[in-house]
Length: 326
Ligand SMILES: O=c1[nH]c(=O)c2[nH]c(=O)[nH]c2[nH]1
Image (cartoon, rainbow, N blue to C red; front, side):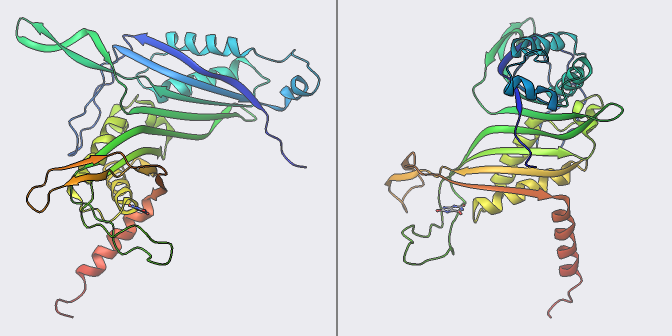
């Protein structure tokens, strides 16, 4: 028998909480100054989906007797933000998903996606001069964290079937030091080879922990902050002469896995938004004028796995052991 799709839920569940427990003691890495979040404003946009065979009659017979109204799901999420004692979105999603399964026996699966609604610090005066305000925050329309957890009911309790943490909508421009050459040239090729392009990339990067519990931030030294992943991406972009976006994201993924042994996979969705050149005075000057590229856009999807690091290490070792001059 074919398995059918059947779930329902609520999207755009906005919830803001002030004075969430700060995230302190995140382990520092060489690519980033990030060490924690004050969490004075903690905001998220959640989407919950619930499933279970007991919901079938609600679809086929109009029997609402086991339906938890999606309006109630919204309240459930918001009230669980009030009682959540931790300091990360990942921890909150896990806490809330488990609570849904415990409260409603007809739910067999609960998936919650939470998108961070980030606020940034602004300056304020203090007796010591300029400091960061602890009262006023600036809404950020930049990149944001996003997490997902899928929890399922088992014989004796619950189990996490899937989880991920991400940074989304990161947009990085590198003004030179990028080429794209050597690709297939045939009767369909009009793109010239380019040895120096202004590479503008959009990145969504997701990562998966070996032990989901490390993502909750209860042991902050094992937590991977999206701010650190963002900083690694920019850092690796800076130091790499990129031959393609494909290779760039691979190198970023390897660096993330190197820095965080608690992760087993880093997944990328990248988009190419390389600027079009409008005015180019080179070789006299580096200064040029560019504009947005016309649609369509190119994209890449790639997972970097721990075995990629081991493979690179093995390659390095075999190079090292090759006798000089042979
Ligand atoms: O980094 C790139 N990868 C591609 O696969 C591609 N294709 C293309 O037209 N431009 C680019 N750039």
